[in-house]
Amino acid sequence: MILYGLSTCSQCQKAQKALEAQGNKVEFRDVRANPLSEAELGELIVEFGDRLVDRSSNDYRALNDWLKNSEAEAQIAAKPKVMARPVIRDGADYYLGWDEAVQKALLKD
Image: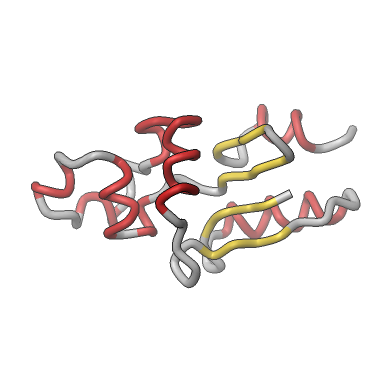
């Protein structure tokens, strides 16, 4: 299982802690320290589309107009912090965020 996010993101930390508490081996990938490759980013865009960009974040609002009107790949490549997180890859399945639906899918009762 791979968790993509930021080491400073509280949702990423909560997700990692909960998943590991249930015995999952979680590989954490800080997308700021170790940016996604073009192929990895492409996979996530295919899976989530524009939902991969957190448009409510201060980092997104700080983007210039050109980047705001660019594709999600360009936005995330320029400023990895605008990526919605966490992104969790469990085998062939991908999950975005750490809401109740994602927790229900990944955590055992």
